[in-house]
Image (cartoon, rainbow, N blue to C red; front, side, top):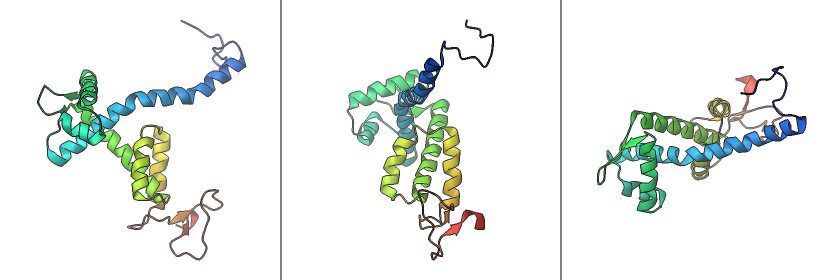
Length: 186
């Protein structure tokens, strides 16, 4: 076990190694996110299918993801070994409580990202596609901010921006528009 005499001291021998390790952290996090992405997609899809038609089979997942039955079988076996679902040959798939919890978190995360994308003016089709990828890679802090901003920006039924931060580099303020209101004015 490595014990440092000074808690502020880098565990690495020199600053260049410490900087290299710090710069690799985002990549490490992304690789870890990729490892859980498939599991999250599958439990979310299973929950959606169960809500739509009350049973979910391997063929439903193969159709949903446009992959082979063999691919779905391999992934379902892995998810069963991870305790996320239960199934027997020729029987429907059932989410465990752990699987239901993960599916719920994924659905909530997806909805927040989707609503944020709509709030910043992305069309519904693009927002749905982009949310599917982004949802797996946002930190809890970013997700919380997406939710806050979506609530500020969304206008009922229009998907247009209602509030604009003064001097924002990515959104310009339109003085004449009745739909635009400064955040400080609300």
